[in-house]
Length: 260
Image (cartoon, rainbow, N blue to C red):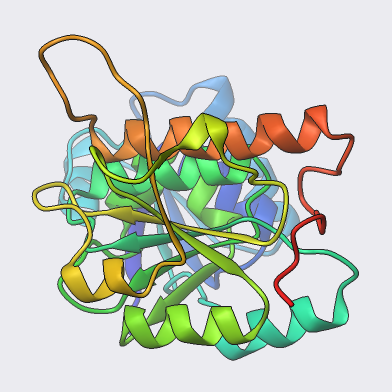
């Protein structure tokens, strides 16, 4: 598997902390040499990872990005989880967990923001298509402030097949579809929830929408009737989080509406 260059203080810090990637060297700015960079160097040394202090021009070339904050790391690709493992793990658990499915999100910044929120609310995993969508690139790790390094990520070749597998595993599948369906605030979301967020331009694809158990909407006022995909995802995920907290259910595990 080809190496890639992770860049930015938070992504590199979190990748070191998570311990999920293989590190093949860290490059730090001679010019900056800040306290945070020295902390990264110290952490790398404790893990026997080579560190090199280099000119910013070399960092620009390695990261292919000038906003590297004085650090880039040569790393292996972030590992992904198999959907079958996710389903079988849940069958052994006493409750369910929130899953976030993304249907053709193409903007790395949107994907990064969604992953950051998903980690913040304790979502078990984020599920994305392998093709025609943003993937887990260094730009996504940067946009997620390093959350990508910790989240369980599942890449599937066919999202509809993935939805069907989740239904068989006990999840209820909810699709966010502005203008149709029930309000997200009037829906019980305390059980095994798989939430589908559509792409930036057209929302969910028709076949994905057809395979959802329920369609939900976020009530809005004013002349603008749509939300950015990452904003809609954040509103929805935090409503799931709120309902779990108010019901006295641990936010990472819930089972009040398990699929029978």
